Structures are given as structure tokens and as C-alpha cells.
Length: 134
Image (cartoon, rainbow, N blue to C red):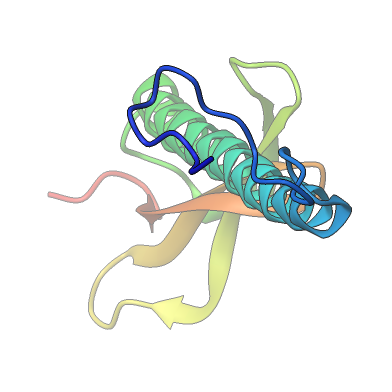
């Protein structure tokens, strides 16, 4: 009797068994595991990038709000100066840049530095004045 080809009555040929071999199952599990590992790594990397971006945006906002809060005239005698940040965990410091005097002007270059856990996140350049300029 010849095997049925209509699809209604599919029976394995004599001596042949149906199903997947152990090797096929193991290979499928390895491929599935590699795919899941790559997906988990990309998700973790994405979350780390998101955290770095949030810290950078927060640090820039803190630097700009610090500049607004202090005003434009910063006297070099006040520098270096630490301020409390608006967001807990961040540190703000106003620094004078070495050798940054502007010739024929009563100003020096400085920067507002925002850091978190000892890592500098943002630097905003500022001018430090020696009194009011005309």
C-alpha cells in the first residue's frame, strides 16, 4: 500500500518517527537565547543612554538657572564659589579660568560647573567682572 498524499490521513512512513530531534531543539534554544541576550543588552544600553541624557539636560538647566539667580556681575574675589543645586544630588561651582584675564577690560573668564557624584556634567562659560563696566 502506497502512502497517502492527500493530507487527510498522514501517517509516517514505516521506520520513520515524527517530531524534532534533540539536536534541532538544542539549536533552536541556542538561537533563542542569543536573541534574548542581544535584546536585553540593547535595552540596558538604551536605559543607560537615557540616564546620561537626563543628567546632561538637568545639569544644563541648573547651570542656566544658577546664572539667572546670581545675575550677570560676578566678582572674581567670590570665585571659587559653591552653590546648592535646585535638584538634589547635583553640585554647582563657579570657577575662574587660569590666565583668562581679558586685556583692557575689568573682566575675567570663568565657568559654572555642574557635577554629580564627582563627574562634571556641564560647563557654562561666564564673565567675571571687577565692578560695573560702563
